[in-house]
Image (tube, rainbow, N blue to C red; front, side):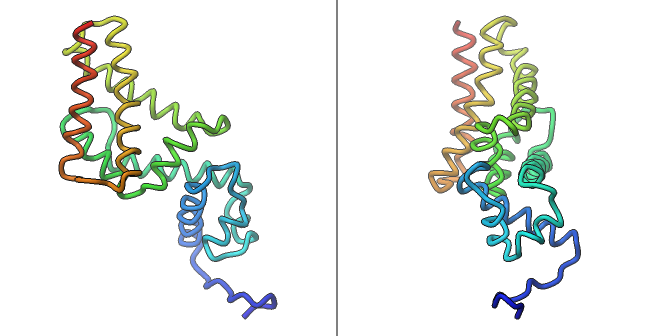
Length: 192
């Protein structure tokens, strides 16, 4: 026991402690976002003191950026980069299931936080570019192709968040349902 009555945190190698703090921060920030979450809440979630958090991260902003980068890297590892095919939506749902707090942080919270919006804007820009390439064969070049390329990533991400929020119903058929929505966006762009 330490002087204040709390059990001392077990000593972990630096990399393990950093990962423990990142995982706890992901959970804490996912509940209320960046502005409403203090480092004391993150430390409590991790079962450490705020001093230990500061040994690993210079500031709350530094910690939050590391949490977002970790979530983005996990998403990239699961989904891959640069292509849209029949495996893309199932991979996105798998990524969201594997790290729902990280997924929500990226696409719900960080998208509304000006200081960190660049992370999400980069993902959305890359997703729009992938959609644009995919649409090149299906929709004539022009404003409706641009519209569809911009709308598809938004629709897919919102559909995945809604799926998470609904308790991840019917995971076997969820990719097909989201794919159906994408098909309808493409059809609407063709019809224009």
